[in-house]
Length: 344
Image (cartoon, rainbow, N blue to C red):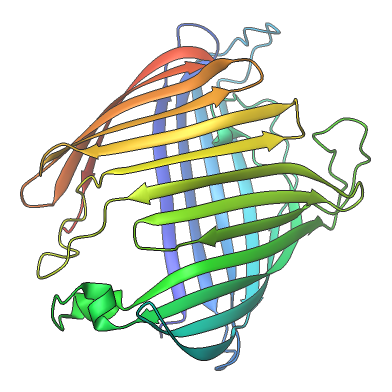
């Protein structure tokens, strides 16, 4: 009845390392989401899922402690969540540089997530899947969006009245979101020293301004209410090659679009100061290059360097990504290959 969405996520991984714990992991998570019938003025849903994670270890000894983990172990989790929100909007007529109207929407939203506490101390630790923290979390906030409607001549540059051109007349000019969370069951220890634990998180303020199709500026700020200061912030900008217009618009989904972005972030000055950058270059119709890095300003060193190339098919139905990653923590060089199918 268009109200229930079922989903199943599953993965099987064989972790092999030169030392420390190695073995197999199977992770299966079925879930269902039910849309709530709240009428025209609100939206909401409830979600429930189960998660089974099973391990079979071939090398069970922990390198740091010498402890031996069980050869066969499993973890069962229940995950329950809900969300509710509404949207208020108003349209303002305007005539400025091809901009005809501006629509301002205010979207209050609240979300709840519950995950019971489950012992995981005797599980291996390969990645984030192996440690899922207890949650009794209520998140709430409000999002402001500003949408602009442009004249056909300004948006499509005389490309006609195709559906693509009509769709291009409306785009997001900017957004501003303010959110906070509270853990109802426990106080969370702060990352920054000399601060008291609290049920409440810092307040997150996220914003983005899109002056044009190709250029955008974004920022993120984390404000600590108890200490009345900014505990973290990030600011950056990006520029991207515009989408093609005309009959071919939207048909090349896997193409690499030439783009560049750079951002600076800090977490409590002198703890983390980092510069992140990404450059993508469209080499040909079927090949693209990508480079990204993370640079630690405090330690004066690169944390990550990523070099990748994408090869796409002429039918726009598959792509092959090949990449090399040089990481300092942990110190390792990784080689990656990813094959993607689309439009099947």
